[in-house]
Image (cartoon, rainbow, N blue to C red; front, side):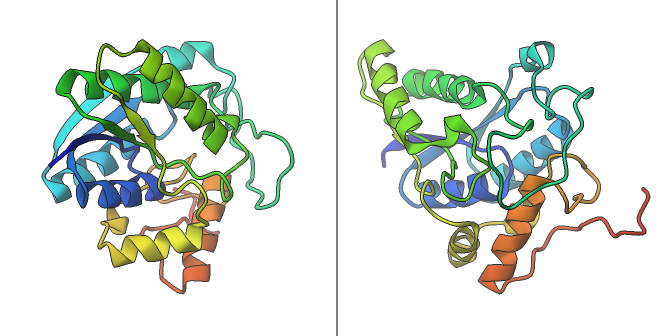
Length: 224
């Protein structure tokens, strides 16, 4: 069976992408800590999903994003804003050029183990407007990768790139992905805030899919 590397943040989209990949290849799951607010919670989600599939896993760190700043996810002086399902412009939760860094780590792993594919759970149409989540970016990055690797051609796989969240939820259920282990909230690690962009997109997806979201959300009267 062919080998692949799967970037797995621990979120909904990456978990469904992992479920797709494990059905097609022998996977190595890669998680990257980059100094985000919910770093420990996302790592816990990653470890749970990796155990669920029994795959080889690797955790890398690129903590320099905290020093670079410029994003509400890595700079605690910038507040995570209340989410909006219809937004113009790029929100402050965008981490400057993050996906290029994540992909670079994954490509290094792929080249080392002889994997021909790198999976990433990017979503363009139902995302938050991040420029490094566009299909054009991934196609261009793939070209750059194959100018820079030693021998083997490596493909960047984005199986969810044009799907909406409801379709992703339904696909995850159909593939028996462990959605209950995932974490999507930008802000909180105990109970999801239910108000950031990521929570709103996730909640809408489950609602439109007619499926109950299995993770806990903060109540209005919950001050913990």
